[in-house]
Image (cartoon, rainbow, N blue to C red; front, side, top):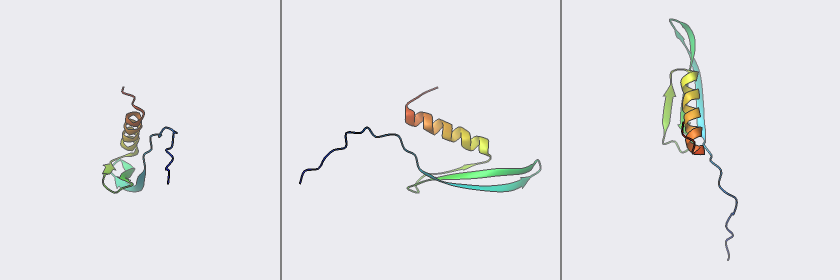
Length: 68
């Protein structure tokens, strides 16, 4: 049986399980986050949402092939 190849270019794709929780600090409540890759191999923990955002921005630039 013939297998057809998909001629559509593969688009970059990232999948993560996102966990968010709030902790009390001396400066008030802060959101913490963790990302786990869909395959469960990679896990990142972030001290605040700004760090999470920075990580995601860097990963998406990487996937687009853009360097800054």
